[in-house]
Image (cartoon, rainbow, N blue to C red):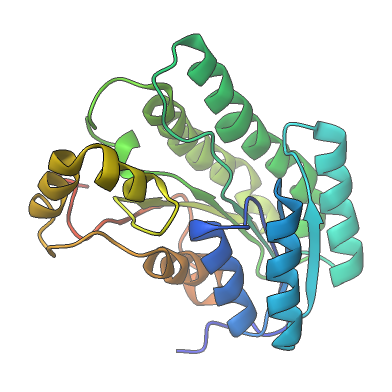
Length: 253
């Protein structure tokens, strides 16, 4: 299937590792022009060098997304350098944690506000595209009970409502808005690698609870993201695509 991504202009946040890094690689492999950011300057430079060596057209910047002014400048500068904007993928997250009010503030500052700002900053650029779309990275922890009550689960659930409502609001401008919600995803240095070391019973139990018998990979999530973001998914908006190997047990109507 031709995803229609060659020459398209894409921005991805928090792209230095894990799912974000694979999303950037996947877009670049499809011939898209890719802008990305992350806090770790060394990791940003490493990925930029890797993609540039492969012939990709890249705009990279080390950035703390809690800095609203720097965030806006990155979006505007990337759109200027890339010649416009077709796709925006919001991947940043504060992750899980049980450190009381601090985790709620962290997830609000990293899961919610950067997404709200992404809509504000990117929409004027996306309006100039004939295939405009946004994809927010969610989690299956937002759609059913997972381990214990925590800010990460609740804030990601809030993104589902926000994505649906934003999709309704900016759909008339030709901009699609969707969510991709991964289940347990394993990669070196990721949260499930840490769980494997700290809570092996939970790790093995999660594998047993997954019908496909393993955890997912960042590459599998990235493929779902680039399809949903691409012109090949032109009639899909307001959706929450679950990518979890069957781990969640709810029925999605």
